[in-house]
Length: 325
Ligand SMILES: Nc1ncnc2c1ncn2[C@@H]1O[C@H](COP(=O)(O)OP(=O)(O)OP(=O)(O)O)[C@@H](O)[C@H]1O
Image (cartoon, rainbow, N blue to C red; front, side, top):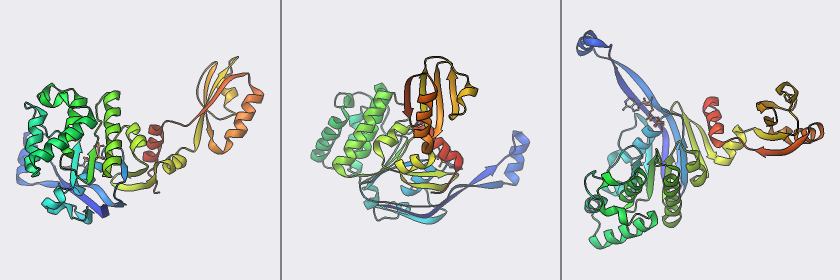
């Protein structure tokens, strides 16, 4: 459904010195610098897959999404989405895709969302009957029936994002590109959007490529993740595989009956924190059983818990390692 082959994007950026003299010089002699935002990225996504697209700020995620949706042309390489070349922006292609950007909105601020939805319906040539049915179906899935009659500016951020999703899905796209769909939402609204996307994918088998800085979105929705860093692909595979590979440590949380010094504890593993009775140790996965046995034998342990480090931390480690899968 989505194929990218050695996709590259170079942005020429004008260089201008500050101040009036800088502007004058720039007027007569323009200088440019090339920014390689995406450098030879290749991947393939099958119909119905939900794939997380991860990378630190400036990695090239939005640029890649813009190329896949035909908003910008690749500098080199090629891509196909739903069998079409995105940059040609043919109606048959546009009818099959949707792009939702968390920080951009398409609904008209002063009108009720329902009016914007009717405009979208007309743009996509959806009959009134089909449009009403589709709005009803999606509004029910999003629990948004009441709010559609209010001006968009009066909706909460979460309600607005739900209405944006409704607008983006009116024409029943087969491929959905989501750029930070839960950005800035509170925890409840994030969960609602996430659950809606999971149900939508299950019900309609839509293919979804999703970027998000919230790991809960990724762990709930995506089995597979693609990670890019400085414009290059550094991992494409199962989320679990990524965690196994980049989380070789496990965390042991200890409650002790009598305090021990960090120096004492360092022979069991890396001491992450130690405030007397409560201790957090990092231990290599391969040495976990042996270390737990030693801790229980040597120390007055009241309670012991073994935990995986948070996914955010693991992904952070992947970014800084910049390793290729
Ligand atoms: N229109 C543009 N002109 C020049 N440079 C650009 C343009 N758009 C993006 N860039 C640069 O390309 C690089 C990749 O940007 P992009 O927005 O694709 O990253 P991103 O992974 O989506 O980041 P974020 O997570 O912060 O949204 C950045 O260095 C950015 O400054």
